[in-house]
Every structure is written in structure tokens, then in C-alpha cells.
Length: 177
Image 1: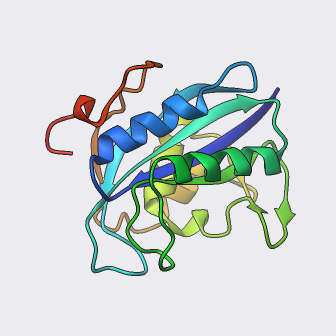
Image 2: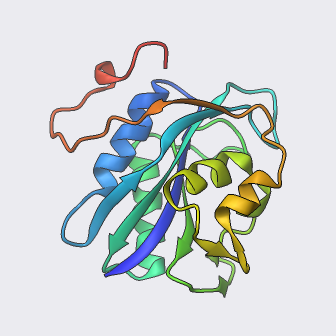
């Protein structure tokens, strides 16, 4: 089994439900197991700012998938949950990014690990530091990286309720999401 870290975010529709459903779909034993999920954080959009606020979380998974198989699984879940790619950094029902995969360093057009922009984003580093503060990225702990950047309006919301359930629907989302 390999350890990997994923970031998830949503700013359209039932945001909390989209996050929880993405985690439920990622948790598909034996190929992939969700080990721990951070709290949910709210943050303003980055890049294209004229859009709704995001809800974000980070999770650690163990997997037998290769990094490319893991990416393919993430992209399939995004498509299944209604992700439409109209513009870079535009609004989305769900976004799932592979942040880290073991200690692999990979830079090709299909996949970059560690994620190319994770060290600049508090909505990634803060939840990652919550679940893996001593994890090293580029020779620094995630905790030190998170504390060295501007939080950019990031707010901790609540734990993410995602227990595997075959009957989950958007109506199961937390109120006000």
C-alpha cells in the first residue's frame, strides 16, 4: 500500500455533500482506503475571484493504485459528480487534486507531484497540517509551510461527515452548505 494525500474542494451546489460524496467514492477497498480527513475549511476563490466561496478539505489515503491510476480515479469521480471544465480555476461541483504520493517527485504534463501550487495555498496547507503536521514537503514540515503563508480569509468550519453509505443524497448535506 502507498500513502497519498488528496485535496478536495467544492463551490457549487450542495458543497458539503459533494465533499462527502467524493470521499465516499474514493474510499473503495481494497484499492483505496481513506485513512483520515481534515476538517472542512471555507476560503475565497483563487484565480477567478467572481465566484462562490469554496469548501475544502485534505485527506490521506492508502492505495494500491499507481499515481496515474489514482489521478484517473479522481478525474472519474469529478466527472461523475458533475464537474464541467469551462475555464481554468472556474466554479466547480468538485475538485480533487493529488497533492503527494509517498515521496515521489514527478513533473510531466499529466501529473505533477508534489502538486505544483500546494505550497502557496493556505486552503491546502492548513488542512494538510491538521492531519500531518510533521510531513516533509521540499525539506520543510507542512506545519512550518502553513504558518509561513497568509491565510487569505481561510476559516475552519467543521469536521466532514463522510461515513460510507450507499444511500447518500444531496439532501444529506449539512444545512447552509
